[in-house]
Image 1 (cartoon, rainbow, N blue to C red):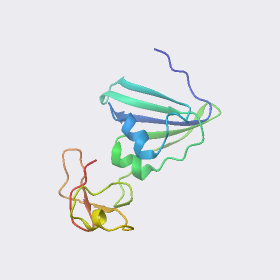
Image 2 (cartoon, rainbow, N blue to C red):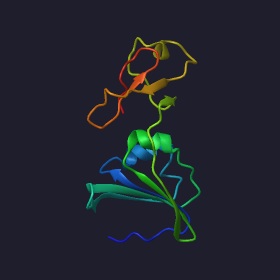
Image 3 (cartoon, one colour):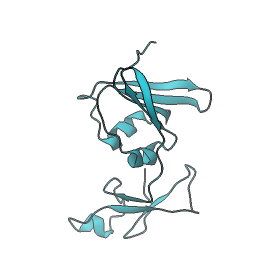
Image 4 (tube, rainbow, N blue to C red):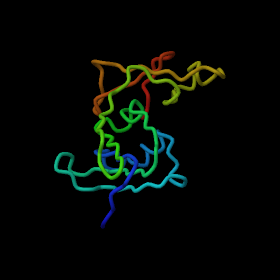
Length: 143
């Protein structure tokens, strides 16, 4: 399989295998309207397998949201066929209107107009190394 390089755009690399579609969904990138290439289950000496997303357009990626779905990912910005910068997402301390609370009794589920707010819990991290809880009811987020 051969995937050519891109001239201008971004490359999201080191996405955990099988998570690239979820990454696109969380970032709000519509694959039907965006010129992109998905490489899934590529060999990686560090991770075993990984996904790679190549997007050929000027797309702004919210690194905070990317860190929620793929904390190991890196974003390479490409201009005129050359990588001009490499960015690593960092987990945000607070997230607003990205995650939805699953607690049916939470005020965010029963009242309209209330923002979905979550905070990062340190010291009680799950197997993926992070845990977010609802600011209102303290329910754990399901990512």
